[in-house]
Image (tube, rainbow, N blue to C red):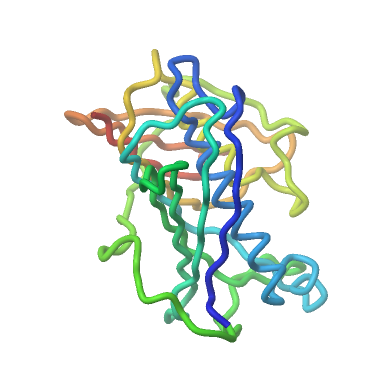
Length: 236
């Protein structure tokens, strides 16, 4: 069995910013959806893993945007895992338009976590099947560094019920919204990368700050003085 999965979607108004760019959170949501569906099909989805007190935890994600998509576009999203690494698992993604043109590619890095103890486990799970002979990126995820935020944040948000997923913490895609919400305006984005450091839960307060260097915007989120996430937005 080839370790690859694809599904078709139609983009809606809610998938876009006010300037008609595809939302980063929409991209990550598509990635999350196909990854979850594929995991269920090959026997390592949420329901199967939670019976062993194990869940998948996302540590890093990134995407590169090549071609603009529009409301109503019909797209195909494919995903494939790479062979297990020393401490975790990489999964890649590709978004194609109706003409078969690559519009977005992405990648994510996952580890196994004990659900009850909230600690990272050794990567003991083995995929069964034939790996796809391609990689979205040759380079590793960037080592994004946090910077001080709490004393002078650009904005602060309260974690609400709509931010929480079935793991009882903020869903990974929501951080992409947090990353752009404090900007004066949405820039033209060509690439996005995020590192998840510590989880946020209901009623937590997240302080967001920015540092700009040429065409790059670095974002850091802190929860009670502790880094929650670090992101990098590359603009055109």
